[in-house]
Image (cartoon, rainbow, N blue to C red; front, side):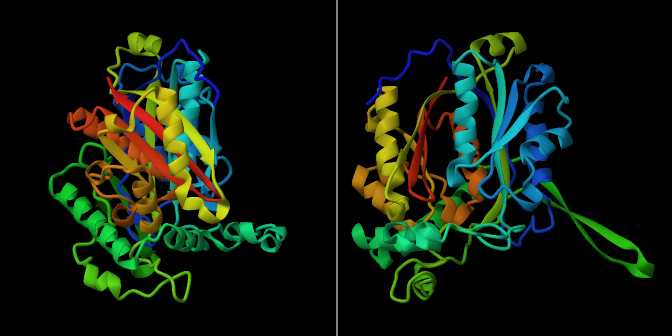
Length: 401
């Protein structure tokens, strides 16, 4: 394994915010993703009033399906909509579900290398504007269908969850119990207002035909995630039919919700902090990505987490908060059991099964959750980790300043 380079510049996370997460076809069904992204860009920059916007070296945004309303370099169009100077460039990247945290890591690397003192990163995804999980016109290479080990890429991630459940012996009952726990934790967090500080409420507009040919405009203030369900019970979850295999165990109830949302993070070097009188919340300590067999996509964090911990010189027991993206209950449980992660430290406020998974935005959204928890003094060393379509895993370590 390569030694970690001794970079001169520390990377500090100064602010982060996110939209509420809407269900697919829910609160944000008529809202453009570039408007969601512009909203969080404005909000995160407003947290540092003495910041000179001209000093931002770049805006990097993750998006897993960058087409239609979130195509054409959505990072740049949203930056312009947010009122950033024309001189501030922006680009969109895609590492599927890890796109949001990858954007943060790429921004951090620019600072580590001394190329920038101020960077903005984030993620956006509207699954309401997508007609298909793979995009509006999915066209996988036909050769993938001829290679049995790559069928998961061609047919979708649900089958990989079934394979993980079989190989790691994750029962349907355990998956449903995990899903129920996700909802319970998310509902408790909402009742305790744990998400309040990290969310920038959004005024969603809806246009409909009115009287005398007039267009009627209505607005609705969205300030809370739509996903958590008070009526989610293990008995009801057990009644759901498998989605991806006739005799399988993966259902809509124990899988991540398809969602809409956006998040943005402000990063600075030490020189940037001093110049703009900014107070950091955390340091980005390490980030690693690993590859795994595509048909077992969900186990990616099993490889990525030890790599990141080794790079940081941390022991797993030092992690007091773990944001493990719940793409599927089966893969989350496989990761937790293989690495012996403490369930009490994993997703304390619920995960994607309850809160939703707006693909390319999720990594940045979970970063906002961790920074908010750090400001409440609920965590000191935290991990963001997720599996990635086509067989990868990502892990990012953050430390409270």
